[in-house]
Amino acid sequence: METFKLAARPAVLVLLWVIAFAHTISELSTLGPTLRAAQAATATAAPRTNVMAGAATLSRRPPPIPGR
Image (cartoon, rainbow, N blue to C red; front, side, top):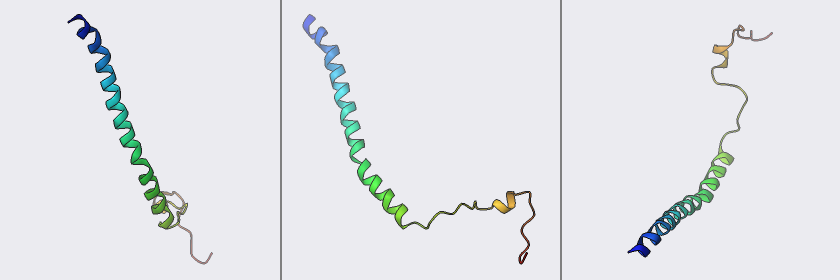
């Protein structure tokens, strides 16, 4: 019985390590497809502009006068 008590704690720690390792590997296996999908989505998206939406309403300056 003493041998079982002595071996139980390391066995539990190894089991927890194996579970954590398997979870980490399964998460990493989804990283590649996710990155490829994100790259494809940004390649087909409209180009970004530096203009903030609604920036004219937040500005304290009056709006520009057309033709000036």
